[in-house]
Length: 110
Image (cartoon, rainbow, N blue to C red; front, side):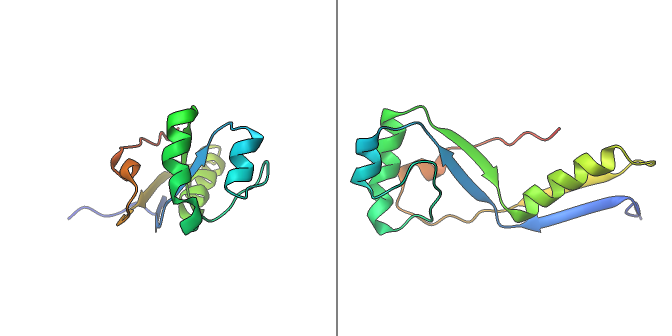
């Protein structure tokens, strides 16, 4: 039977998907947003996602506390005295009305 190394970190959690785009003031005003802010989307923001994907170059950034913690641990432990394995598993179960939720995203680790 294979054993797990003592030098291993396994993180499991819920992922987040940040959406980043450059938009004009009219777009912000239309949805009641402020520049350089972050929000949790509400029902009034549903139309915003399709509109922003059509008008702007959109960047998607995967994250969440578990993923971010494992990434930081990986960087810190990389410079340690012994080999260390870091692995993060994020599972997203999405039941939503937005058409873009089926687009696959790839997150690269270093």
